Image (cartoon, rainbow, N blue to C red; front, side):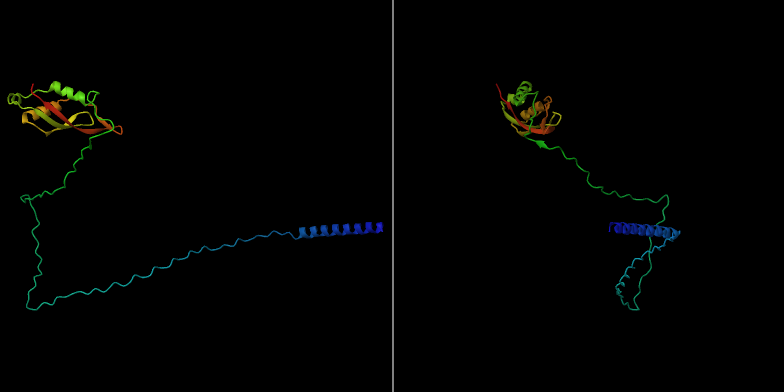
Amino acid sequence: MELGYVIALALVLAAFEWTSSDKAAQDLGQLEEVNLAEEMIPITRQKPPEPPPPPPPAQQTESFEVVDDDVEIEDELILDDTEADQNTQVEIVEFDMGEEEVEEEPEVFYVVEDMPTFKGKNKDAFRTWIQQNLEYPQVAAENGISGRVFVSFVVDENGNIINVQVVRGVDPSLDREAVRVVKNSPKWEPGKQRGRPVRVSFTFPIVFQLQ
């Protein structure tokens, strides 16, 4: 039995070897060089649809005026003489170009984060300076006029005194002296709002008192 198995296995192996070699030989004999032609596909472009035709214009009716036959119609066109020579005078008409733009003045504050200071001090230092530089008007002194003059002024961004005005006066001579002494004030340290120099307004009383 074992011998039979061995013989059968040998026959099977011989059959496999014979089939594979034959197939290989057959396949090798059928190889041929084949040229494949590429198929050229034409490129086509689709034509966009034409827009619809515009709607026909609306019919307009013209109005005609019936004129009697006995009415004369003046159809003559009269043109002014436009020829000019060296003696022709031309009138030039001025026209308004519009109002000039007015520059807006900087905003004036009354209270800021850092108020202006006079020589690094407060308003008392300015009051002392005024008393030292104030000259009592002779006319007012002779007539016994005294009182308190309220003067308003603005300390600008550079520390200069501007816009000096009398808010409440006593006498013209006293008012003029109050304005004069304030205008001659030395420079101040300007006030600042958010770290930027700004204009600050003050109202200051100046006392005129006879001794």
